[in-house]
Length: 495
Image (cartoon, rainbow, N blue to C red; front, side, top):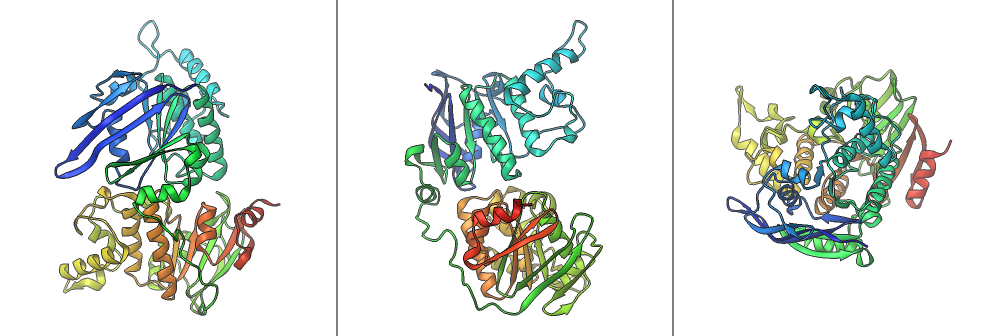
């Protein structure tokens, strides 16, 4: 039996003239996974920041186990057993697992020093509860991101967590690591913890969620139970309309000549890889984490050094030794981590979009500001970027709009080849649909696209052909009706 542990009623929040939340209700039960969904900017993060004491609501009430509670600061939330695990994990790699779990709360001995034997024992009990494969003395630097998440969960349990909020926890995990996380979540649910799970991934929500709350534009769009959940219904609730075509229709022929021809690429991480992409074609690059997908993309773009191999663009041999060489030959590369490897979060949307073409908009050493504003307006219109102006800081935009800004930067170079590494990671449903539309529009204009994705439904739904990598080599190629999730996994895993 599950009991109502949390009630958030009539929650309202404004930031100046912007309404972030308006009369939002959320309940969470013990022994339950409650998914919180909605497009970026729908109000999910604001609602959770109110629950964690970072923001104060303008109106509304929070009740914990039936009693009203005021959460004035994050320490109040932790004391009440409410803990958040953010997408950006707060782990110190130079500390041990036990030190990370009890950071700031380590048990003390008789003379005020840290009681390390007790800390290790307490940490081991928490790790046993989660069924981890590492111990309290293990340096965090030796662990994977999936293991880091388990350390974060153990830290929450050390605070006697009754409510655990997880924000996009699988964004950087492989399918296997995600499966391990789901097992941990099942264990926590069985132990009576209420889990609020924020995700854009339909498959995860269908697998985990007992109930679902959907927000749209700061308002409650509706609630669903597991029995009534369906992807189409969820999408309609999130975007306010039915999406008849989640993936655009794929053409099966009419492609141009070979635009990108990679032969025998080899590096310290790639044994041997060859592929061809024609003008107007979207080629999927699939494989398990560590198979070499990103490594091959970085070799093509000149971000890493290759030991040998030949590259042709539109039938001409080219020697690409740096990203500057790649850009000069019309190759764009959208990296998998937009915040660390792509965007300048402290700069404006205009500065980010124009970064690669500033030389085209300079006169006598001075930037043509009017031309840059025109470039930004065109990108905002073409990609449906939601920003107050071109001077809006990119760090303040939603994940989907940040991704579109980065995509706009590469469209500004008028690419012949565009490599997209995890193009929809961490973006909402509406933004995904927009990015898929943009990809097919670019292909229709003759751009050769390489799409790397860990989401197999995305690879199958978007790509015309698929090359599967395994252990740094091409394991096989699929086209037409051969392209399917099972066929991709067979190639990715067989030995």
